[in-house]
Length: 280
Ligand code: NAP
Image 1 (tube, rainbow, N blue to C red):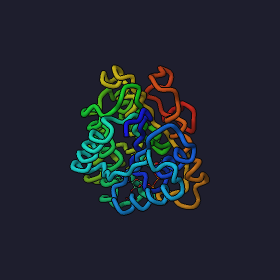
Image 2: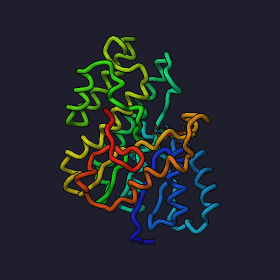
Image 3: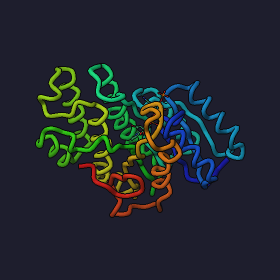
């Protein structure tokens, strides 16, 4: 059925903060069509059905689709489905992510964190932009983190490389350089911080600034933000985190609900719980 309700899609929303964002939007009865996505279809459908049972009034504007942001075929299937169902979407919330549960010597885990948080997130976003999947006055929100503070880097040069990055490729090169240091065992010697999660979120926090320079973003009046949700109790963190999932979702819902159209004060910026902040 044709609808003029705007469309929001949240990646990795079968649990944790992504699920919290979807639930808050359903509960608020916002004037949106809402898409829950997950890499594991069974887990995603289970979460979708749980929410549908709790909010039965949402049945005409609540949808599920599989999405693994590291898988080309999955991205391409999602894009085809969006095209056939809606044409385009309005708000993309890049929430999917992987943590390291603190500092670890497991190189494979470090590489997986980069594959999801950096290469997966950027590649999926770039595919959405390349395929022109966002309506004018849309939004791209990246779930970043205060763990991605550039002051965690031990090298002044690397910090400048982050600050001077101008293109997506510059950010991907930083991700590749860190990955190589991990594989060679030279992370500390090369001036990185030893937690791949922190480095991955330095890249995620920086990405909206890079996107804000792009013609496709500016010409289509698309707002781009990154957001630290706070330290939230989820499977990624554990029980010692002080915030509930609901509190963690508030910052992202706040950004979804900001007025549409580019606000120069906010464009490309990093938000720490409702306020523009610095990440080093
Ligand atoms: P979570 O409960 O572990 O949820 C992470 C979600 O990402 C899960 O749905 C997971 O799916 C999904 N995911 C992982 N890899 C994926 C992939 N390749 N494709 C699609 N989805 C994938 O963690 P969370 O704490 O809610 O984290 C959500 C976001 O918030 C992350 O980006 C995280 O870095 C960020 N963040 C969290 C905190 C915090 O305190 N919790 C603080 C700052 C930032 P599966 O269920 O299949 O694993």
